[in-house]
Image (cartoon, rainbow, N blue to C red):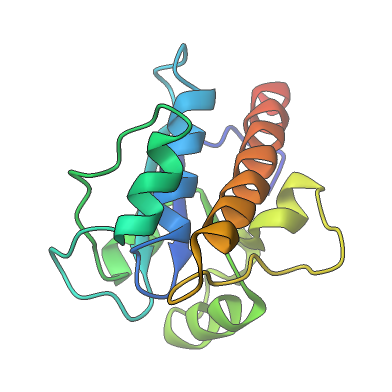
Length: 157
């Protein structure tokens, strides 16, 4: 996987309303001076056309990144097939994608695992329904991992 140039990155969470839109925005911000990365996000259980949670929007606004106009996208065969790299927020997402889209397992990685930022958990916890402090903590975790991911990808080519 790491031998060829990665151009299209797909980030996956459950509803595509918190973690994956945050990750997409952070990856785009980290790669802002590069026009060779195409970064998208989707959800395993997303409903098409929803907005991020107010807490996710606020957590990102605190980092001067606006995701308020983002709309959710359900994961599809076309998105999976077009991606060079698929980064998922949890082992559960990895299992779902591997079963639903077999033949693409070699390009599916846990977000923090790919970034090399695994701490107490390999998964990025789902903040939905949690207090703002949890959203901020998850946002920090995703931001750190995103910077590492873009650095890793830049070194590949």
